[in-house]
Image (cartoon, rainbow, N blue to C red; front, side):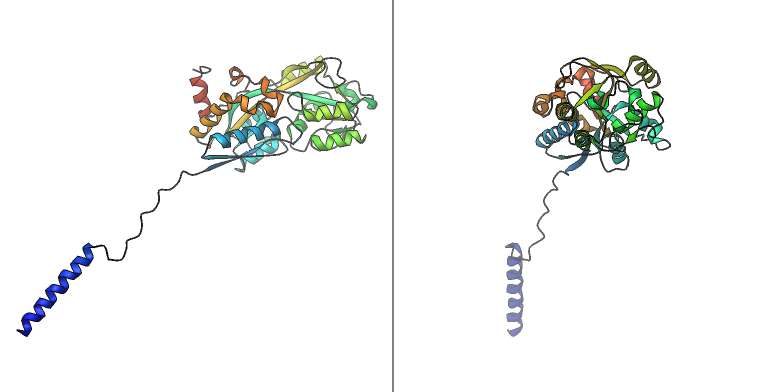
Length: 334
């Protein structure tokens, strides 16, 4: 009898144990992990000095992209422009930027400033507008021609910037030993304005889309005026560097500018590193061209941007596949 009681007791305990197991009283299992959110891709976007054309343009573009592309964060920042931008990209510290096609060609092919260190991953997103060389000289310095710059205090641009490279090409072709034949001040646009106001420099090279704030300041407040590049020098530079085009800064573009100014210009382009994904560049390209009205308030230069010119005069620098896909959709490429 005692033996049967023990058996019954064991059976009851087994039933209770099974009941508890089925009722969910056991230790809870680990909760399923939440599905990972889409990764945010950060694109560093160096532009140029704050008084140039492309600094406000780049800031407006970054803001537009950040608003419309939730999984992309574009961080625009000031830079020394041109060579500096390409060096940042080549080193992996930036992914998109602005350059002129001349410097881009040198970087892609490893010549001049980029001798023996080609940047083969350089790709173009869009051709934007022509960027003219704007030589501003102090009226009181009595500079009538390029030759008169010899021995003068001159601001060719910040070291490593596009204007500084342009000054080197221009003055070398004009017979100068650069930079020895001038008294160089390697500063950005903002510093050049102050130096001209204080009569510490006699001229400066400003390379930016017209009108640009630095030239406006120099002509309005520092006694500056624009200097033309004579035709022979323009022709010689175009023969040697095929990315150049003749350009006229129309009279009245700047204060006290009574005549047209003849100069040279290079196509300004938006670029990316080839390693940025095709999908991201496609979206950046599409949003840029289809939302020009959003960025138009940033600078009048937007009025000079035309979709049909996005793939022309690129000096042989290849398009990024993402941009190429968009232009094929729009019928600009086969």
